[in-house]
Every structure is written in structure tokens, then in C-alpha cells.
Image (cartoon, rainbow, N blue to C red; front, side, top):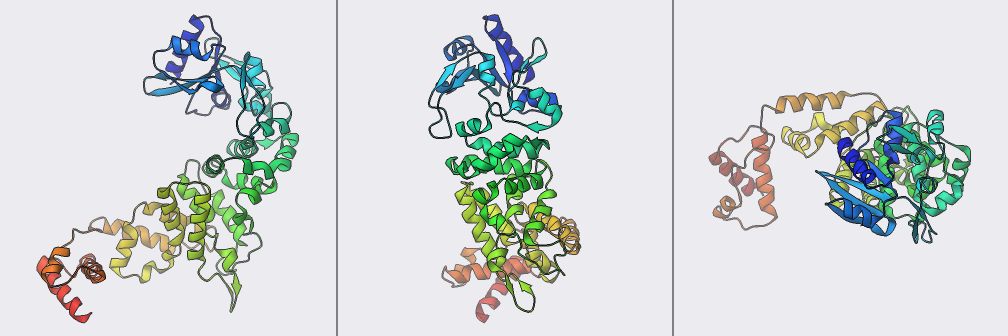
Length: 434
């Protein structure tokens, strides 16, 4: 990617244009972090860019952005620009082309407002980004409220950069975030979701969510998490404290790069506890798993998660208490539990749930042992009989079909049936009892 991006800069320079690497790549280069893309800023107009490069498409030509294809990679090449009014709080009504300095001062934060000249190998910094990186500060460029008014997502991005980079938010910028937090609803659900997930998977999720809470953003975007505060738990199972404390401890155990679905399930795994809190012989949360799984689905739908992601998050929450019963399960039930898709996520959720509460990993270790043992066997054996066999027995398709076939698979999983003949005999016996 570096070679291809450098080639783009060289071609633009050869035609007499200014061209630099811009934004996040420059920040990450100074911090010594890997960067997954390189954006290029130039004084070449969109039509100039399209003439110079063979493979392009107008990704955001109205905003001066052209995508240049080099090999398998896509590079955004943007004309230096300053922006007009943001009447919708999301995107500018129009743009005007400018020079490098004019382009820098319209960006969000100083750490993202620098350029890098790959030919001269030097940083071009009009906004004090290098200074703030050294001071570990997130500072809005110019007036913070003005920057946030232009694009309300920047309110969330300030928290995300603070958490991911382990920087503090500069005081004036912080005050502006807190003041403008209620305006986050002007941002689309999809954009909010992406920032939440970047906080959860960036390696410092606890810091990020505590900051969201401190600045009033958590109440706006995920009030269900705020409601966990002060919800006591049985001390014999949860000596660590209330539901909110427990959840924050679990977020603190999320490593950088964890999968998005898993991280969101960790955040919401106990979301059903506040509405099911009751004190009987002790504190109880009867039905909180089912309630929480359903609540998670609604939250995910609001944030426009994919159906596939919603299903996985739902199952992780719905099944997270099943581990307490693994030692009592029939072998067939246990094998079905262990063989489900992405079971490693279920296992890891259980592990950190235990470590952030009573501390016992007995069920976790039991499952690990059984997984190693069952590797030598088929946890999903080829069916010995099917629907056609049941029809030959005189059965009509219906609910009983599934019951019979499940019963036979149970016997297979437990090693009690190994041939088709045995399966048919057991099926007839089962049907006669029904």
C-alpha cells in the first residue's frame, strides 16, 4: 500500500500538483501504529485526478473525493477543501476548494489535521497536531462547538479516539462534548453503531464507556446500560458489586481486535437484570436471560445491526447461563451445546463473566476437557434414518417427525445406536410409546 500510495503522489507531483498523505495515517505514523488505509490530499481538481489515473470512480465527487484504484487497493484522493454550512449536522451543504492550510483547519481534531510529504519525508502541521500527540490530548481544531455543529458524530469520535489511543480530552473540547451530547440523535443509527463498536473493540472499552457516561452520551445512546447502576447482586455470586460495575469489569477484559458481535454481547449480557430485579429469599433476577436477549434484539435493531449479527448476539445472551448446568447435561445435550457455531464466543463470554464475579472456572474447564475429548468423535453424526424411513413406517409428516429424529440422534450421540437397523427399531419403540 505504501508503494502504491507513493506512486499516486509521484504522478500528481509530476503534473505540477501538491499532494500529501492526510489524516489518520499521519497520526498513526507519528504514534508508530499500523494504519489500514492511506488517504491523499491534493490541490488537483477531481477532473484532473480522473485524467491522470486510468482506474477511478467518483466516490464523493460533490465533496472533491475521487477513488483511485491501484492493484487490489482503493485510495481516496481528495481535493483540498473548506466546507460551507452543515444544515443537517451531518454533511456540508457545499464545498469550496482551498489550499493545504485551509483544508487542515476544517478537520475535526488536531491529531487528524496533519499532512505527510512522503517524498520529503516530513510532517506538515498547521494545527498543532504533533504537540497534542506528545501531550496525549484530543483537541478540536479551532472552536470545538463549531466543529461539532458541523458534524455531530464528532462528539462520539472524541470519546472513541480518547479511549482507543489512551489520550485525555482537552478541557474546552470536553465541555463542548458534554454540552452537545443530546444532539447526537441527529446522527444516523448506523454511524453511532460504528463508533460504539470501535470503542468496544479498540482495547480500552471500559475507559471509553466510563467517558461516555461521564459526558452524558451513554444516557443518550444506550440508556439501558445506565440503568444497571445501583442494581445490587447477590454477594455470594457477585462480590464485585452491582450490575454496572460487573459489566464495566468485563469490558475491561476485552482485548483489542475482539469480534464486534462478541463485544456487543458482553456489553448487553446482563441488560435484562434491571427490569427483573426482585428480592425474595435473596436478590433474584428471574427470567433475566430471556428478557435480556429480547432487549438486546431491540437495541441491535435500533442500531441497524445485520440480521446475522443480531442472531449471534441474541444466542450469546440467551445461552450464557447454560454453563452452570453443563455437568448435569445428558451427553447428547452437551454435545449439541458444544457443537454450535462460534461456540468459542460462548465459552469466552462465560470465562470473563466468571472472572468478573465469583472467580470459579470449573464449568469452563469442564467444557474445555469435553471439547478435547469429543474431538475424537463426531458431535454431529450422519443421520441413520430420515423422513422417508418414517413414512415407510406409516407415519405422516408432522411434529412427531422431528421428535423421532431428534430422539434417534440423541441415541447416536450417546453411542447407544450405531446402525440403521437399530435406529429403525428404536424409532418404532419410541413411536409406540408416544
